[in-house]
Length: 122
Image 1 (cartoon, rainbow, N blue to C red):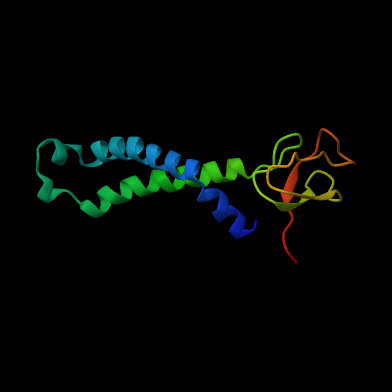
Image 2 (cartoon, rainbow, N blue to C red):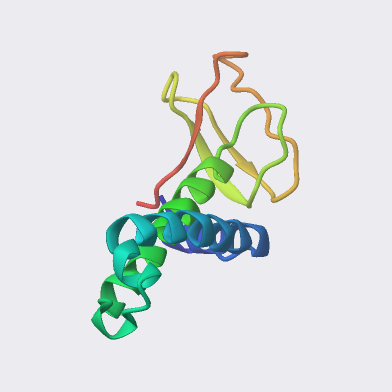
């Protein structure tokens, strides 16, 4: 997959905001599980702050990754999330270029069984 396309989708406002929301909820729960006794007792000097911060980073990264992969689908009949050169994964023969926002067509050979993938650069 083209890295610049992945980064473009991952950096979209809605992807990042969703990641922050997930990180806030999941990170708080995980921190309460892992260091809740120290936090609730007010023993903040004993809290491992590096682990505390990483506990928020992990769900953020997982959320952004999964949202990006989900949004990078080029299903027939749906608007393309980005401009890309596509190749039909079903038959391996069909190809098309699609512009961002355009409706993705079916592969002429596969019809409704089309499964597009981003064509890698040679």
